[in-house]
Amino acid sequence: MDLDTRIRASFARQNMMQTLGARLVSVAPGAVSIEAAIRPDLQQQLGYAHAALAFAIGDSAAGYAALSVMPEDKEVVTSEMKVHLLAPAVGETLIARGRVIKPGRRLVIVSADVYAVKDGRETHAALLTGTTVPV
Image 1 (cartoon, rainbow, N blue to C red):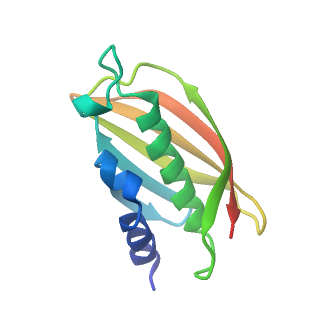
Image 2 (cartoon, one colour):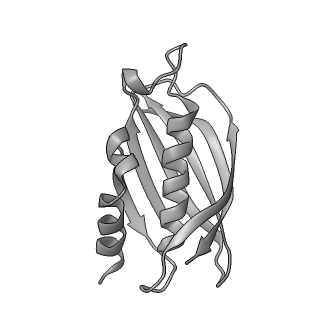
């Protein structure tokens, strides 16, 4: 199975991503992008995208980036993920760009940059760094 098909098939089984209305934007070896609309039901009390939305799509983008460098018989799970909230996530959409920092057989170090898109301009809203474990 080719890489794009493999990642998209796995993403389609992610019920949480479906609940959030997230969609897979791009897949490449070691890099995956996911976006989600900043719907009213996904905002916090000030009207910004809730940090949980940024974390969810960032974690998934980073995790799928890790999966993209794994053999076909492997999956990955997140063992830890840290989030730095950098700016209010104001706009129409959030986009998370995950990438592999250091691949490995036991641990894969990953990161994701999450941007709020408003009127075509991107604001860096969050930075996630973490570790996934092949299973």
